[in-house]
Image (tube, rainbow over all chains, first blue to last red; front, side):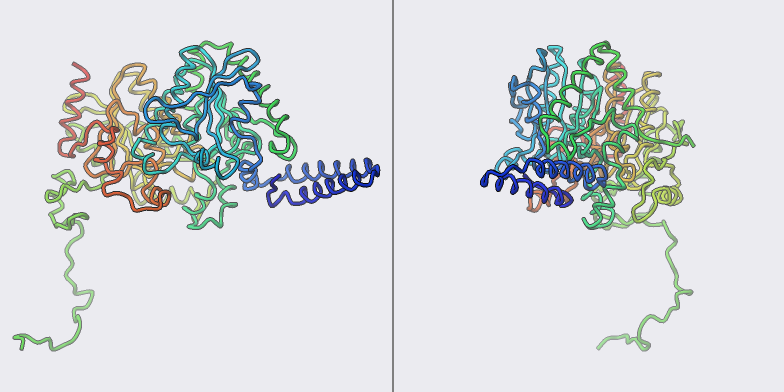
Length: 318
Length: 281
């Protein structure tokens, strides 16, 4: 288990509990009542800490190293009835973007999402969840195939941004993202986008044009990361907390601004503390949303999707 | 031994008596430093006759270059930014807006207008870099969206002249969603078969490149323009090496297959009207 700074009180309690368990086992003593007491304390501590998270703390939770990633969700939701598909058919297979057909309660769904790695080796392999242009083109290829065979699309968004590398520029990072925005607006099949971790700017939006855009409770979505925002506006990373607040990037803030369609509650203490629960919640939500979206015609879905995004932004008529 | 000797040391003319060249009479090319009378510079579409450097210009200049007799009707000129996030960095966002408006005489970073280009109808949305770095906020997105409505209703082709550092941070996610909004709207132009020409000028980066600027039926640019998604400084930091010469110039982007053509500014109007003719006939 990994713990964030502000999770230290929880960590202490958990370590105390584990120690008590060990001693009890070793000495054959019944400590169930004290254990229960500590469990209750852990829960109340989690509630206490997690109901008062600052925006910056939520950003930290969204990056928690124990949080489930895209393939974890896909495998759990499909009960491992999932076939990963590779490549953009032009340049290569981008490991930062994964996708493929999976079964959701007997129905075929196309899953697409950015993938992070859980250890140093895998983090590098998946390029820290930062796709190159071929990642966006692979995503588009898979989504167009889903459209061709009339299968709904679910995207999982979790990226610190599109990769700002030399080759990425040569192969048209801007064009690749732009093309996805335009094409996704016109997809005939239902599209559900779920932000499961970090939703950084164009790199996130590149698979984020959906009939439903839903954020998990402890995620962020904005035009820039708080660190970069701080370094541009105040010329140092020291103001990241302030930037996180100013950007209004949490799920509740985004919902309040009408820029996303829903927020999914996470287990107490964050998605990383109870994978099974968050998988079940996300799976149920996808099913619910698909049932609603199935009732609309492709034209209705496209019209409503475009209209929704066209309403975004605040202007004064002057 | 010199013929002349300075008797009094230093400059003796007082500031009051100093004879200044009147402001704006001469233009010095920022690239080759050649000096040219300003009126010649304007007549040359703000392009240096010596080194072909294309000076950065704004919507007023592009409208004058493109529209016949500089005649056009501006669309939705009154739209202004709100401050949905109550944003404040070193300055409050509303104050920043007012300052920029005073300094530039513009309402925001984009103006749209409809007029004729050698007799062909065209809607032109043109960004102004002088207004907060040409950043794309809600007004930019909304004006493009409404300009597309006009194009769809009247079946008039669209041209967007991009010149921007990217998204406007002070509008955060509202700004991000303008990428979605403009691209979604452009998909309707596709559907209805109305041409869209994107002119990417110096500089076009960030969220603007990753949305409408790269989505033209034709993507064209001016010589030497900086075009990219990530800015050169960020790319340099990522790869930890110096960038190759000419990286992210219009010429580089064309070689990699993302531009249809690079057109000198003096050829801009005839080329655009030719293209409009070809789309029509």
